[in-house]
Image (cartoon, rainbow, N blue to C red; front, side, top):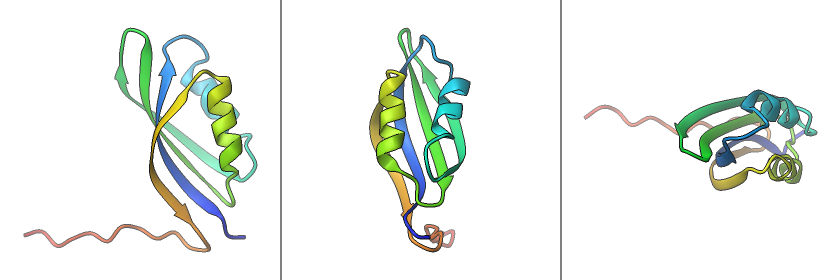
Length: 96
């Protein structure tokens, strides 16, 4: 089945609960999600800056957004989207 296969999101989450473990487990329950990777990029006094990578088959984006809103997080930007039957990677340029 085609649809969303990968999302890379820049997310801001309050420092308080839930933990990123709990967030990952909740995101993994969204229809179509097969894997979640959350990386902490920066810790502020009140927030965590996260890179959230989600892979699967026909990922339900509205479900992802809903889970993040429920935990008090906000999508700062959508940095990568892969959709369709096949993963299409960005070609690497030869070193100059």
